[in-house]
Structures are given as C-alpha cells and as structure tokens.
Length: 249
Image 1 (cartoon, helix red, strand yellow):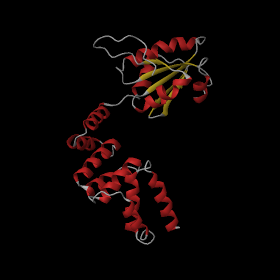
Image 2 (cartoon, helix red, strand yellow):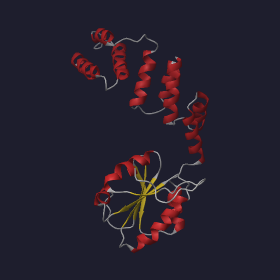
Image 3 (cartoon, one colour):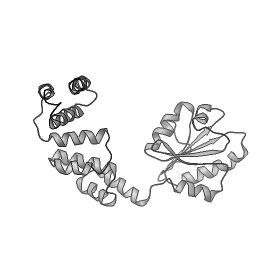
Image 4 (cartoon, rainbow, N blue to C red):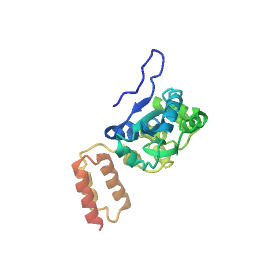
C-alpha cells in the first residue's frame, strides 16, 4: 500500500493523506473504504481552486485523528480514476464508505463547509461504542451491542455463531431472522437447523436424502443445509446441487 504522507511523531496519529494512482485505486480507495471512510480529492497542478481546497481537505482530515482518509488523485496522471468518477470539472471531491460513493461536491468550499462534509462521514459515539463491543466478541458484549442496535449485522452474526456452538439452535435462528440473508447467515442457519448431528463425510447422508427431496420439504432443507456447511470450495457441493436439480425438475 502507498504510505500516508507526513511524518509520524510519538503520541500522535499519522496523517491519513495518501497519493493514489490508477494502479492503487482498488486497494487504496475501494477496499480501504470498507474499514475507514475515504475522501477522494480529484485535482491537477494547473487548477487554481484545487490549490485552495487541497490544504483545507488535508487539515480537516488530519483533525479526524485517523477516522477518515484523504486520497489525492492527480487526474492528469490518472485518467482511469477520473473516468471512473465521471469527472466533468475539478476540484471534485467524493466520499466513499463500504465501497460506495455516499456524498460529494465540486469546487472549492470554505473550511467550515468541508468540516461539515467530513463530519457526516465519521462514526457517531454510538457507532464507535457498538464497534468496540462487537470487536470484543464475547456474549455479554454482543448482547450489549444489540441492546443499542437490535439489527446490527455484525453483532447478530457473531452472537448467532456463538449460540450455535453452545447448542442454542432455536435462539440462533430467531436472532438471524432480524437481518437479511447472506452467505454467512445461511451457513450459521444451516448449522443451527442441523443441530448436533454427528459429523460424517456427508456422501452417505446426501445420497440417502436424494430419494426423498422431491416430496419431503424437511429432507430437501436438510440436503441444502449440508451443502451450505460443505461450502463452495468442496467440489462435491456443485455435484450434489446438480443432482438435486435433476431430481426436483
């Protein structure tokens, strides 16, 4: 990764201002935005307003203490990024969070307006508290996080996983119902529904279930749950999905 500009002093947070190129766009802007809000400053050396806005952006981002990152992009040298943002004029500033553009502006804004723009991207004290509780990862902390935000995806998934490991399968399924399905929730739900069945290599169980899946909904769900636990990396998963499709249709 491209290092942040500026020097690190003991006891101080390093400046989170980075120069980004077409080659590092994906890692330094898109991927990084999944953990830290990224403000993208699209500028050029010949742009007068850019010279006014740039130092303001750097100062405001520095003041966040590492809660946001400023990615500076010279559009003359990096036309790919300029094209990705469909830049019509500069300076152009975009904010990304979780891989998506969530805000932006064009032109040189005064410092107070830039501060307001960046402030909207930063986590609230409640968000920070929840993040710390989820990071702790124990049941008490996860339940405390859900007391603040009952639908927090990270807390729901982590707690449901703990409950399945403990054998509280019904409670885990009830908890997972709070959030939309994704690969992780399907895996945990499958483990909860399968319960404490003894482990095996799955082939014998899946083969036996194939005779029942067409007319037996419970057998079909068990079949699918086993495939979820096997995961896409197991070459047998795709084979058994094809067999299931052939039997049902």
